[in-house]
Image 1 (tube, one colour):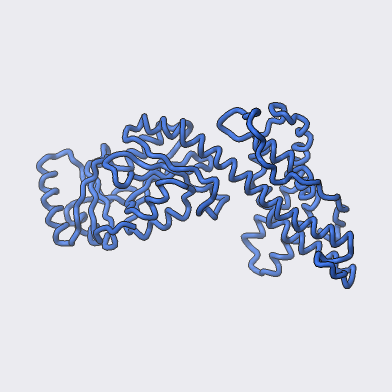
Image 2 (image 1 turned 120 degrees about the horizontal axis):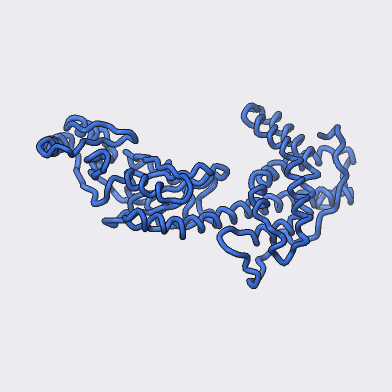
Length: 389
């Protein structure tokens, strides 16, 4: 991060609050004391402000601020932009749907780390948060799971940067290959809203679709590898390295171990597949016959919902590792028929989900992407007995 003065007071103007000040730096408390002594009042969101309705009072306050800042060792800088909170509200009011804007202040540069950890970005926004002072950000939320981050564009006298936070289902956002690129916005709210609506939000929707799809496919690949290994061992009576099984009674324990492992991955399918399936329109693709397979997949998700709900409830209350492992095995065995359905019909799901990317028509003339799951369907195994659930 570029070095910044240890104590700063950043001034900007607000149509509602007058002159707004943000204390910033490693010694930001000294800046806050200077503001309070100069007559500034803290406003919602954490900034300080004084009205600009009285010229004489404004001049007196300005003189007091200069003296108090000098006494506390704080540098005063004036932003050429309007107060970020105002611009965030103006932008939110112009976006499609219902959006809210929440100002977040980072008094200490170290606090920016909290912002960077949840950003899902492959562009300038993430780099700015990592390497430049970012005293404030606006979080834009639409109430449907989409959260965007807005900051002043570092190194420029005007304009802003806007990017996305990851949705709450995702945690590992660093260098995620589907991450959308943040965009630079002009300082005029109408033009900025147009850029967000026509450029960024469609890009974000496509990126999220691809991330969900990749998450589901990776989960199925992990399950498939272990599933096929287990079926080979059961059919041959030998481990994968050729060593014979010492006792066939080991099979049930191996099945429970597989079920534990499979459930951990199948939760990703249950989390992300429903929204992907909701976008699939087989009749509009070259593979209308996939409709039957998609119906089976939807039914498998429905049959697994009760188990998923129990998993969520227990996840918040079970602290014993052994107890949690036994629960996972039980959940995996209970949903094994659904898991097998998803392994069998994964190819149809993948091509339909790829054809359903939001933001444009299906490009039927384009080469089909590589199908990660294009392989023979796994052999069916008997439904687990009640004793195994």
